[in-house]
Length: 105
Picture 1 (cartoon, rainbow, N blue to C red):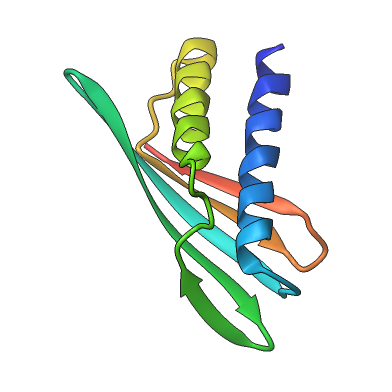
Picture 2 (picture 1 turned 90 degrees about the vertical axis):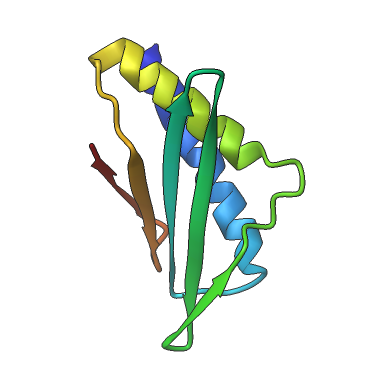
């Protein structure tokens, strides 16, 4: 069940990235940095998409800040499930819509 939840969260993050590109793109990438501290946690993101061979850096179009909550939930699920305590990850999506993820510990 945990793998399904993790996949669902990643799909929702990809959807936020997709919506943020506002149109056609050749690929997109977002680095999510996660930090936990005594009384809470925080998430920073660096988003870019590629269109016509050019890199366009923008903020995620996420007025409710759902991405931060998804990243926090993903971190907690993975820490509970595998013990992994990553600090950041990069989520790349190619032109065919295939997602690739790399975690940094």
